[in-house]
Length: 425
Image (cartoon, rainbow, N blue to C red; front, side, top):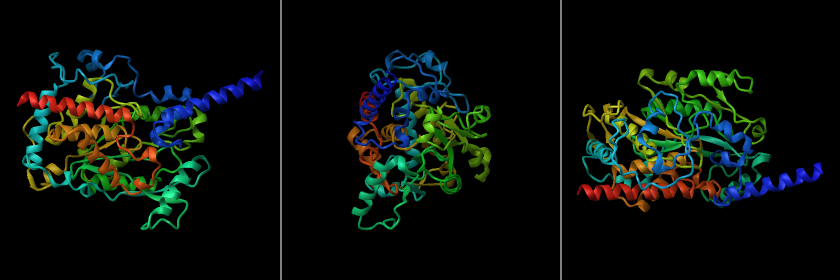
C-alpha cells in the first residue's frame, strides 16, 4: 500500500508539473518558473515578504491598499493573486491617500515626456538596437538537472552562423538587462546571485552592479519580487541567514530543502554592495513592490502606485507629489543632461522578463499613449531580444512579458490609458 501510494503521488505530481508548464512551451526548470515547479510546500515560504490577500481587483479599496504601505524602504506586504480584470483602474481616488488617479498619473507622464523628449517621438521607438546594454555573464547550462534546457540551447547555438561560443558546450553568454528607455529606465534580472545553477557568479554580479551604479547612473533599484525581502530591510536578511536554514547574513535560500536540488544557491543581498560601489552611496534608493512570480498586480492601486513612484523619481520628486523641481532637458534624442540622467531606474524581477517586462510595458504606455497594445508589447519584446543570448533560450523563455496573463494585463492597461487620453481630448 505504501509503494502504491508513493507511485500515485509521483504520478499526480508529474501531471501537475506538466500542466503548469504547458502554456510556456518549455518544461525546463528556470528561475522565472520556479514558483510553479517546486514542491507546493515551498510556495508559502516564498510569500514571506508578500502576504497574500484575496481582494479582487475591483474590490481592493484605497483604504485597504493604503494599509499595506507601498512606500520606499518599508517592509512591503502586498502580494498578488490571479488577475481579475482592470475595469476599475480609471476610478478616481478621493480617499485622500497617496495613490493617484489615472488622470493624475498621465499628467505626470506627459510632463516627464516633455522634459525628456520635448514631446517629440524619439528614434529608439523605431530602432530597438538603442535598447541594448552590454552587461553579460557566462550562463553555465551543462548540468544534469537541465538536460532539456541544455539540448535546446545547444541546438540553437549550432544553428547560429555567427556565434563565438559555439566551441564551448558548458556555457553561453547571457545578458543581464536592457534599456526600456535609453539612459533612463532599464529592466533586467536580479542583480545579485540567484538560486539556479546556471546563474551568474558573484564576480559577475559585482561587475554588473558596478556597471549599473557607475556607468548606467542607476539611482533607483525597483524590486518586484516576493522571493526576497527589501534590500534596506537588514533585519529580515540577517534573521533568515541566522535562522539555521542554511543561509548566511545576506543570503536567502528557497525552501524547503527539497528545492535545493534544482535551486542550490541563495539569493544574495545586493543593496550593500551597490552602495559600496556607488560614487555617492546616499543617492541610491531601493523600492520594494512585490508581485507574485508569473503573475500580475492584483489591484488597480498596486500597479498605479508602482508607476507613480517610478515617474516621480524620474521627475525629481520621490515624495510622490509630482512637483516641478526636476531640472535638465534633453540635449538630443535619448541624450539627457547629467542632472536628469543621474535618476536612471533599474526595474527587476528574478529572470527580468515577466514582472519587469509588465511594469516596463505599462510605463511605456503612459509615456507614449499613442502606441497601441500590440506596439507596446512588440517594443518590449524587441528590447528583451537585444540581450545577449536571448535567441538561445527555450521557446517558453523568449517572451517578455513572459506569460499570457501578463501580456493580457498589458493589453488591458494600454486600452485604459488610451481611453483616458481620449476623454481628456
